[in-house]
Image 1 (tube, rainbow, N blue to C red):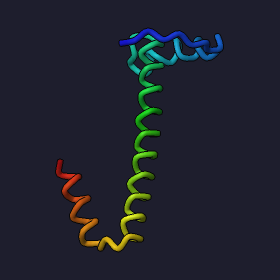
Image 2 (cartoon, rainbow, N blue to C red):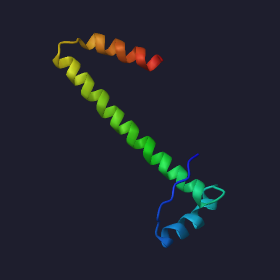
Image 3 (cartoon, rainbow, N blue to C red):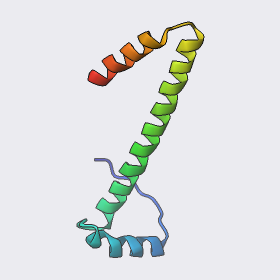
Image 4 (spheres, one colour):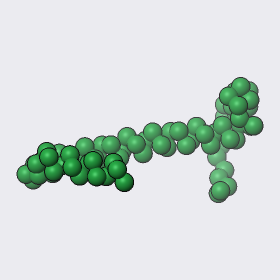
Length: 79
């Protein structure tokens, strides 16, 4: 892991400390890591989905058939 220093308002830290044990975390720092990880995964999924959608649209504009696109997507999903 890497050490990162961030400034967080005290009331937010207090809330994190109070909430962490209720959610099953050993402390507020693991809870922060979980929140960051969840947000990051959601954003990556959203951007990757938008990229795939844009790629499919571009392939269709270039004359690639729906059958070929579907076969390629199925192949990628299996790997």
